Amino acid sequence: MEPLSKAGQKWVRSLHLKKNRDQEALFLAEGEKSVMEGISVFASYLEMVIALDSFALKIPDQFHSRTFTVSPKELEQISELKTPNKCIAVFRRSKAVLLENGLTIALDGIQDPGNMGTILRLADWFGIKQIVCSKDTVDCYNSKVIQSSMGAIYRIPVHYTDLITYLSHTTLQKFGAMLNGTSYKKVNYPEDAILVMGNEGKGVRPEIEALFDVSVTIPRFGQAESLNVATATAILLAEIVS
Figure 1 (cartoon, rainbow, N blue to C red):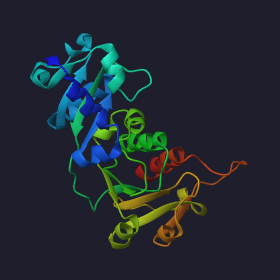
Figure 2 (figure 1 turned 30 degrees about the vertical axis):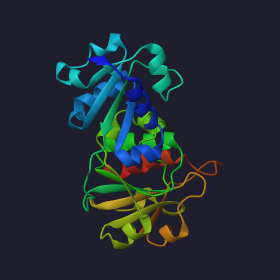
Figure 3 (figure 1 turned 90 degrees about the vertical axis):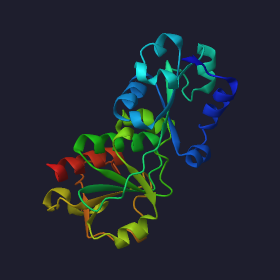
Figure 4 (figure 1 turned 180 degrees about the vertical axis):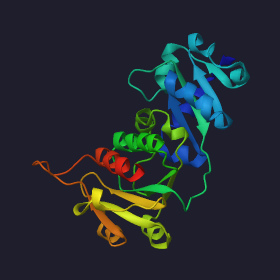
């Protein structure tokens, strides 16, 4: 282990920008729990760990050559968190193949990083194999998404694509979450299917809705206009997977 150079610190800071993360196919994970889980389940993709001296000693020996130390002030300067933790890790992105079996979650224009991270966590909980996103959906490698995913980012492949083209060409049955539709409890869901969730404010675009095989809804008993998209995803997944 050796101190991280000024050039190295500048490079890590550059990865705060999406365009740089995309260009280098990398992402950052911050915090003791997130970094250690990444080292445990995503070790083959680890590029480097940046840590305070006190935490660096906890890194497994086989990764010491890729572990670099910084002072608390330096960590604060390269961290995206308001209150930096003890470490940051840089990982390469995995290259997953788009699957045509099992249950897929498709996201149309989800914007809130917290919702995206929670949906990743839900996918991990319910055994979903992949998430497919429209190109205008929030970056899954956004620091807030990674924090709220609670490690799911390491296990759930996320694909960004033209959602209309994807849904038009897939042979899987498509179920779309809508305010008006068939009650979600009255629908038979096959094992191989796609659940489409829409934007927090606008919902699903009309051209996406036109591709649904079945529109499903969670019946409303009160006066709220809508459900949070992550909450709705949890309710629907609990029904579909059970």
